Length: 133
Image 1 (tube, rainbow, N blue to C red):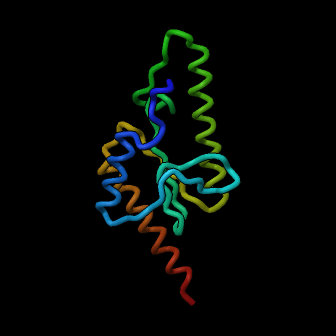
Image 2 (cartoon, helix red, strand yellow):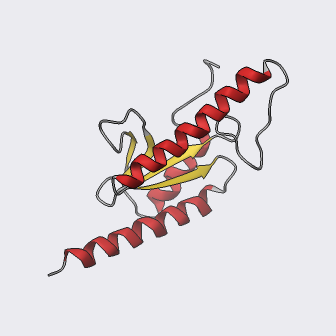
């Protein structure tokens, strides 16, 4: 497990390249909420959008998750714990006015970047309208 990358994975880098090519600028591996010890992979601070790139195995993808036969109870507890923490993170961010976006590792990075770009753009437009007198 120590050989598993948790940052800058191929999928994450492809998503970041696509977001950058679309003209978006962002921060990487930041805590959206300083008091909560959970990092988002990509953060758009001014519009409060946090993007998480989730691995199919580690986060229990409904399409691709596999359950190991060896040490099955340990792995089920581990993966279910990850899923529960993901839900809790989403709830904490939502209650603080953030939008949490989950991207699965099997998703096409261009399609995921388009989805993120639309959400960021929508929130920027909404923020600029609410700032007007």
